[in-house]
Image (tube, rainbow, N blue to C red):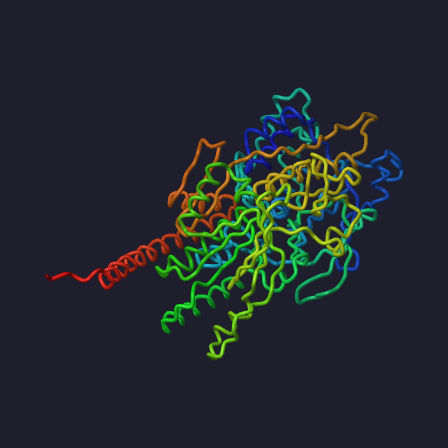
Length: 624
């Protein structure tokens, strides 16, 4: 029934684009049949068996064999519990985990589908990457930017009926989206092919299958055995840490994100600090504190030993945002320019995938902040610091010298012909890495330890429906996937939209495989949805109280403090759950207000200090 399917899909994709997906669903989908899937269990673990039907039995049912061996009796419905495994808890993984329980899994007199969903990630916390720098400087709390997966997945199932109205009508799902399930009966009247499973006489019109909360497992993926439908992983954490387990799956969603490997560049893994995780965020905070203390000691000694150098590698969104915020953090707060920030980018221009408005705004702010921009420049090698060893006995300087390095660069004026190549080096008190690197061929670990097809960057090649052609029950989304010839940009909104489509297609794949024929007629087929990206716009932070927003193909363009506030509120809405969104809105608003008061006081002090400096250094009055 097309209306029924459209409503379920509309609810799932409401956070990405309400009207567009609704139209596509109404045009493209046949009504969903009820799903019948096979048993799977986690081997080498204490996970109980989830189904009364084995995988072999389910395969026979899907091929219409053995119908007399395991008849489906209306008086005795069979419960099937397929195992869906999601690898990676980034934007794509967490949104897939939260969307799957809301889909219309079978729940009638003949069969009941209760999928068991497992999310695997090597960290215990989800990271909202766009706000990671705010966490570093204290403009956001840990629970706002990096909540635990346990807190996000609490109540993710449908068994407790949390957030639902018992009186009918519209209610709220745990994600804060409208629940249209209770209105299903009204819309079914409009269909000439109403599904008898939702007919009022069956008594199941408003019932949904009870699904347990998503299970979180902290572990490191060691490989994927697609032939046996298993994920090999080593567990992390205090309990059973280091054990190797194999997890069976009926459907697999790979959302591990882009792989950052610095091994290909000599010295990079020792001196460069990537900026993608909570641990790296706190390490950057520690190193910035060292720079602060060292600059303070220099000012006390009135030692003008030259400016300290901070080098940021990567001229994409993250690199530009980080460079501008570091200038704001190290120079603007003190009213002095003790630090020089250099942005190194191997492309011909920074922010090459950004909208024209955001690119121009970013370049304008970079130039105004005095950031040294090096394009068509690549990092060749990172060498140890060659400065003189300290004899001052300063612990701060000793610690700072350990992270200092020399960055060897190569620049080309013509990238196509490599003419005009030059090699030079610059010192770096702090070296930060936001650019990706091609994985080396001798490190086939993690998801690359499989026979899944991938490109030279290690991204898994998928069809437009986001699954692997040779293995249709394996899906890949986000930065680790490539569903078309020209890859999508590595952004959160791409991963989140793909999560919605992949969730529906996992449901469709399992349904089409395991639902048997009934009464000798072919079952209805649930069509898979091809992914088409809908660009909702982009936002960038350009400092503690500055940002730029571009949306609706340039119809909406905002910059400055207003954009900074709006960016924070939009991110609150984009949090994985409604509870997390409310927490982010309240905490973020409070901290931005506090920051505004502090910055206002600092600006007044800096203005007074600058005025006093002008008086002291002004020309003497000629009394003659």
